[in-house]
Image (cartoon, rainbow, N blue to C red):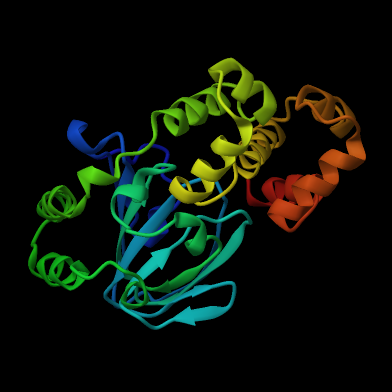
Amino acid sequence: MSNNRDNPLIHLGFKRFEPSKKLSGFVECYWFINTDIHSPIDTKEYLHPEGGMGIILNYAEPLQFDGIAQTAPCILDGTNTLTRELGLTGVLDAVGIRFKPAGAHLLFSLPLHELKNETLALADTPLKNYPDLYSRLSHAKTLLSKVSTIEDWLCKSLQPEANTSNIVNKSLQLIKNQNGLVTIDSVAKKLDYNQRRIERLFNSQVGMTAKEYSRNLRIKTARSYIKSNKYSSFAEMAYDLGYYDQAHFINQFKNVMGITPREYFRKKAVCK
């Protein structure tokens, strides 16, 4: 199903599709960007870390991640803990599969923390059947047929023997329900499970620690607060986000985003 209401990337020919019910537990979305050959693009977008990872199949100009061009046509965008800059230039024609946290665990036969903060060619990963998907997508005529092609490939490629731990799924849901405003110790106690075991499972199946996932959700909540002008001060916002002081909130926001909350607010104000 297409979901493109309030699309801020319409200038990139961006289209987003929801996965089918059978894949909704693993996949966040499928996305497509395609620009007119007569209207080359020169812009930058920002990719914020929210716990997932993705595959990008590129049919046009190389995409640039933090200023580094990825010339491989098939790219893995690993689990990230920091905001990155995506440079888009020239003519764009790319397809993306965005996995939910732990969703890609069923596709890659290695601990996902080995792919943390990595953007690399799929050829450098254990995944070997991606050339078939790349070729089939190039011949598909419509976006719906491309989505169907991706889903067929995923159903054949996912490894059922690599089932995600129920503890990971429950921990992810608990942390998400609280927008990251929860300690991993309290999650472990609620689930009556060993905290160190939870951390090991997160590293392997999500690709980051539970603490990093929780932190990034909290920063996501902070971004939404800043955009909505909900608070009159950053000190008040920091308190509601569970930080013990404003300085700690500002430092953590900058560590993830690369800019301070005030700088982020100013950028959003300029873009209105």
